[in-house]
Amino acid sequence: MATSRAPLPFTEAVSATVAQSTRSGFFFDFDGTIAPIMRDPAAVFPVPGAVERLRVLAELVGRVAIVSARPAAFLCERLAGVPRLGLFGLYGMQSVVDGRVRTEAEAGAWAPVIARVAADAARELPGEVLVEDKALMVALHYRSSPSARGAVERWASAKAAELGLREQYGRMVVELRPPVEGDKGTLVARETEALTRAWYFGDDLSDGRAFDALRGREERDPAFLGIRVAVANGETGDELARLADFTIDAPEHTPAMLDHVIRAFRATPYAG
Image (cartoon, rainbow, N blue to C red):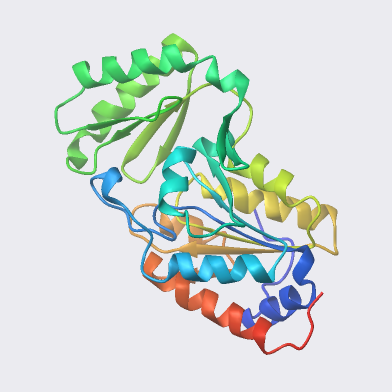
């Protein structure tokens, strides 16, 4: 799909955001965007400087949030130092409200089915495949054995068809999740309704839906500006980069881009 406007230079995008700070928002994927991709998902932490920049940014704009496939409890642990940060886990099936994880009731009803899928995957898939049980979603990681991709995808497709689940493909992973409505795109569309400026940083295929949500809002509302930032990678980053306004080379570079934004706010006497 073609973009609905000519890409803005970075400095103009930042200036437009600073000019309407209270109605601006920044949204980030977690893994591959503000944290590295690792073989052991439990070992992942934000890149140096990311938490500090998010904390500052949350004091400058109307909304800052993480939109992730991670469980919300994991996000709480990793990002506890940012008090005004919105946290949405499992593609929006979970959110953090007043410090507590809230799970969508429709999704929660699928927990027994997901538990069964996790057990079946651990028993039936090759041992090199990491089965990550997220309670409401199962992630099948084949990063340690890329040759297992075909077996993982076939198994996931069969299981999804058998149990009525949805598949989500990503960077060396296939996820199986409940067939509830909602993804990163619908979540971002909802969270940006009251905003006139919104940035989204992502690295994976599911982030393309958030990009589409921003583009769709621009097409409906000429006063709205959506800024799409892709984090390059050799697995899915090229596809996402074609949809982006700007690209950065790695999660470690995200804080540096945010520094440019933060400096622009601090150089402006008043931003409303």
